[in-house]
Length: 111
View (spheres, rainbow, N blue to C red):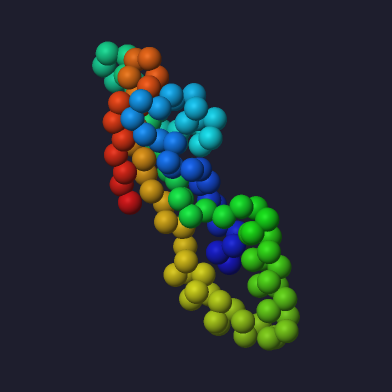
């Protein structure tokens, strides 16, 4: 069931040049990978699903699936499973280089 999948919620619009690292981490949480570079710089990778849904939406999806499964005697799974597979997470990797004073120097996105 796709409604129970892991999501990486964050507003990626905050990740832009000259943004403060602390502000980014307060919205997105700590990076998935952090590497120190020469000159006091740091490279951070954030894995974000720009279209991630909230917990309430997930609960509604799960509830709807259960109701449809019961009323269709399980036939709903034959319809819903291909739809859920097609709508899986679209994780985008944001590769951020921070300067020595923890400001964003460059941002690169990889899908």
